[in-house]
Image (cartoon, rainbow, N blue to C red; front, side):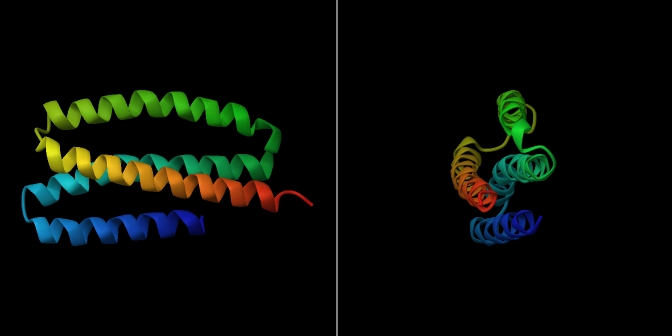
Length: 120
């Protein structure tokens, strides 16, 4: 759970700093681009951590289910943001892509650490 706090705090802090520099409405679009990847990365990390602690053998199936859910969520999220919310595409996509890559890199490192700590 500590990792979720660090991920959320770092993303929110950096997102607010970037948004302040860019002003409105581009700053709002940067924050909306950050919100989707952050929400899903935190949620899946909590799910994976709990699964590993209670049922390590179930990690693969949980990760595959989460992957399928992410595909659907991100497709719908980007479509809604670009069509219904009418965000500016460049700041939104740049923010979404940057936060997506960084958060999943962090999640991979956390998963490596979690699995290495489980070995004796």
